[in-house]
Length: 277
View 1 (cartoon, rainbow, N blue to C red):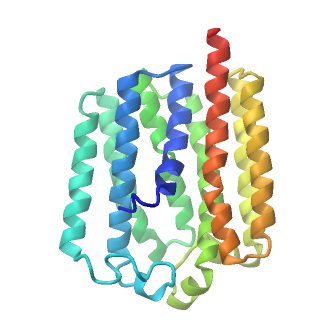
View 2: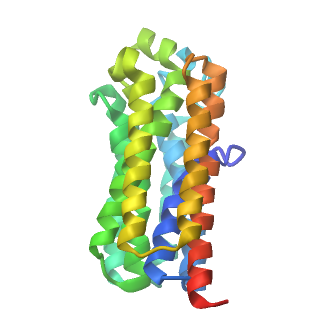
């Protein structure tokens, strides 16, 4: 479940929190917030288990993953599938108190989480599929809070989509040499020698759309300050990845937690300022 490596939980959590705060126009319902935080942890954990099951014959050949429980034979396929099913069932039980629209969307979220690990076999950019999966917390957050899916949902999803492609391409750059040997497809391989350019272009599109969202939502200075800090962090990531050193690429990937966090702080401060608290 990789609970000892919470970066995946955080990267899944931030877009959901952006969506929840936008949907509530301030502090969301505390029950909904609690359900979504716990649900994010459960679904990311289930996704990790499914991913390791899908890659059980690949991970032993990759330096970074060869010691994972399934790759090293410490966990069986049956045990992994039972664990993934149990985690998914617990996540489903969590959302039962919510409205029907949220429950319906949860089936799409489960499908995306369960099928993503297999896309690297045939899809040249599995990171794009992950972008959809990791942004799907946004419509679910709006559905839970407002029982509706306004236009802003889809714009925020598109922004998150490009952010996910950017940071997961950097993640794929860490394993690029091993992935080429074993025939795995990733955006880092598809972009080829333009991988760094592709990452930065996706980041640029992400920030541009987030600025547009700010204009549409009439956000205050704090929101744009958050985007400015996030842009600075992204520029620092460029300095790390431009030489394509695997260790520096991994550091750049981890830095995206701070990008998500400062954007959330900007959104949260905006709601506090508007409420006059």
